[in-house]
Amino acid sequence: MINSTVILGSTGSIGRQSAAVCERLGIRVPALAANRSVELLLKQVETFKPEYVSAADPEANRQLREALSGRDITVGPPGEEGLRIAAAWPGADCVVTAVSGAIGLRPTLDAIKTGRRIALANKETLVCAGGIVMRAARERGAEIVPVDSEHSAIFQCLTGRSGELKKILLTGSGGPFRGWTREQTATVTPEQAVKHPNWSMGAKISVDSATMMNKGLEFIEAMHLFGVSPEDIEVLVHPESVVHSAVELVDGTVIAQLGVPDMGLPIQYALTYPERRPSASGRLDLTSLAGLTFMRPDFEKMPCLALAMDCARRGGNAPAVMSAANEAAVGAFLAGKLGYNEIYESVAWVLGRIGFIAEPSLEEIIASDGEARTLFKERYS
Ligand code: MG
Image 1 (cartoon, rainbow, N blue to C red):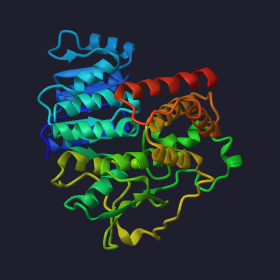
Image 2: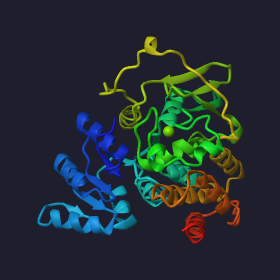
Image 3: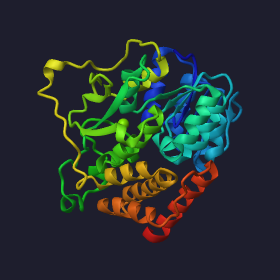
Image 4: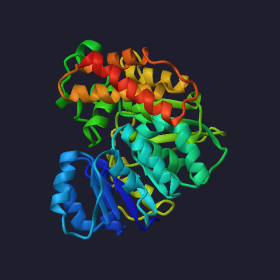
């Protein structure tokens, strides 16, 4: 188990739950970074007494600086720089990367350079630059322990095994609009899309779960984390969200990880690994379940999943372009500027207009990401 951790994105859904686990287990938090929730960030400062804190939003950063003036704490700069300093802050065993989107990429690489554990909750980082990130982690001896519930499940099923994996069974609930037709989803509002039936999550990932883009991003995340090809991963729709994912081993045995849908569990495991500690989570009562169902995805009704799996097979800069366009599209949808069905349409439109790079460098990935966002903005706002 780790003794101390930095939390990036400490006021978001995963960040708040990570802070709660740290408080309960007595894990020290020497550095915190958030975007704009100054009030909550100040409460976290009182709880953890960190040496460093930053807010990415310029106005929030100004307020934070004012509130903490005269105190013995370093207030970092706004923007990505503040996150990067937090990620590499000395004296931590781990960094929880709980920011949303590609902004997590460089801070994650900075944290990897220090050789500390990454409790990875920022899937976009692996989607954009999985090859580069995993190589850097191997070179520096930095452990990457997934926080995403499906990947935590796979990680738990594979712990202690090597060379025995045949296939990953990646489960997903199908989101709130499972089975809906294109006509039915045309009028979906942001309020409807952020209400997930089983999981309580941030706005961006909730919309991604509704469109099933989240499962597509997780597909790519799993390829990198576990070093497997697209053919080695099968997506299963599992509406009850009890089996968090499973693995099929070479002899045909299937091992699954089950539990109540509570992100507190995978967060805690990423911090206590390889140990387990008692948790504050509810318990799974198998007798209370009416049944567990599993279906193959209907790609016609889940075009974002099909698109992401296609990008996974293409590789290169395609996942980075797709993820950036999706971030822009989800942002526009949440702001009421884009229809629900247009999320898929706009991402596919952007993807078709950006040049393919088979083996992109980090700079080329970041450039492709920027190009995708610019193109989206020009066309859709
Ligand atoms: Mg997940």
